[in-house]
Length: 78
Image (cartoon, rainbow, N blue to C red):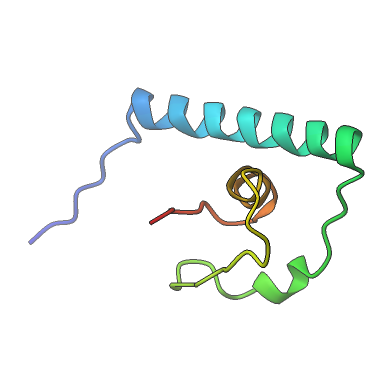
């Protein structure tokens, strides 16, 4: 069976661009408003594509946005 060598659709490309712009915008805003500093991203090297469980240690409404804007992987919230 031959593999499908389809080009990425325009919709997927647009979604990736919008995601990058939003994540960057939120990261800049959090850094400016709250002095956000991210440490420990080196621990994510080699984990791309593997399932991860990341748990926030606070119960703020900002936790989801903070995690989504700073994680090097695309999060899925459950």
